[in-house]
Length: 106
Image (cartoon, rainbow, N blue to C red; front, top):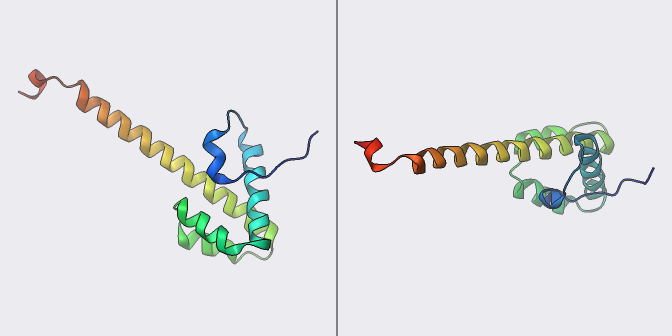
């Protein structure tokens, strides 16, 4: 079995197919590296992905980097899933408005 390679969360949308478990593991590796070597970039990444500051700070209070990285990876994936759901909902709402003909609004 090949070793997992870290994945930057910004690259998630470019991946064709990945199980949740593998995605989580790869994001966790990237976050673990940032925790240990570039916390400033990790904080910027959390801001860019709109991860809850309160939940991020709680994750940082965990006893070791492995647990912190695991929890933060989960936060990133959950937030990305929320954004996808919001976009789909918005697209459905927009499609409903477009489907209405002027006769429907009378």
